[in-house]
Length: 97
Image (tube, rainbow, N blue to C red; front, side, top):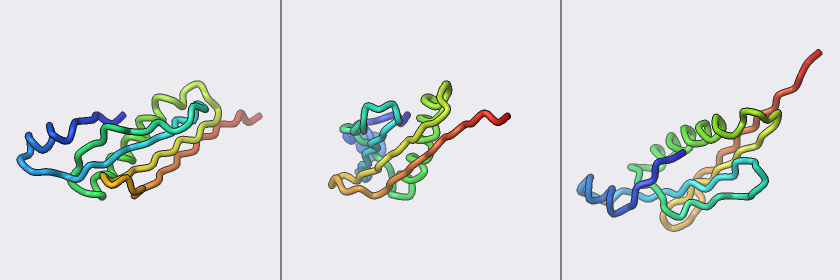
């Protein structure tokens, strides 16, 4: 999962303010979307895109074992709350023969 840092901590350590992105996800457990209310300071939307791809694969590694089907989704929002990215990862395993 994403390691979240507060905006103030990131700005203080870098000396400048970076954009804040939120990573909301649904791990397919049937509990609905988990909303990120903390956010993560990242340099750009491109950096958020890479972080989202890493995070959804980590989420998959944590939730897929033991299941034959799973649908994971993630929405990345910017600091205004606007959705900027949507990711989806589907897993399906079937016994053959």
